[in-house]
Length: 326
Image (cartoon, one colour):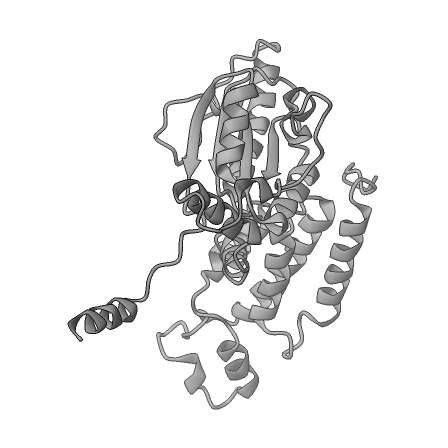
């Protein structure tokens, strides 16, 4: 336990890595060779990993001080106070080099404030952008194509394609009753009778992580104020859907094992396993299992930009038209 009373043993490996990053920033963060964008890359990656601890707060505080020192010379990231371009200064080459290394697309004063008040984290704009860039570089999962082939097989039976019997389940073991352990709701949720929110094609799971984290926090606070009555009023700040999110369980399904493992890791680090679960499975199989076995109500199904089918190239259509003309 550190001086602030935080348990540093729970995530010792992550905290140790963050402590190393903090020490490195203290060592060279004020040097001209350490650019503002380099500091941002460090804190963004820590936020993307879902680390929320005394170690991460200390890193963010040091990073805020380093960033402040680099832009507090009386000028904005790109301009002096009088509005002239900072790169036109000829009497201070170091200042010129430093400002050329500051990303004008970042609102540094707001970022510095968020680093200091602990509002910087996974759901901040820059870490989310980093996750999006990472996810766009991932290849479509083989299961996606297998599932598409299975649909084709059902639509056009007997044409020599693989049978749906060849399809392999996403992951997990099969219990004695024939049900996948992925859908053993009593072991997945503290209260499986709660209404369910399902995110189909959840990717890295950031939407459900945000909902579950905010509502778990608000639900705990509401229970304290209501004497454990459970009459919480958690509402998503950006949602117009009239529902009590804090009384729900959450399930995210995706074909990407990498994305699901990431989402599960963050969920575990945030202590959300009692109400949040992620599974690797085709959407159809997940929906079928939920309809067949979930003991509570399915309150909401979200479909937010899942992996699309490949669009046909326009030139392909043109070539086909030319062949028909011939």
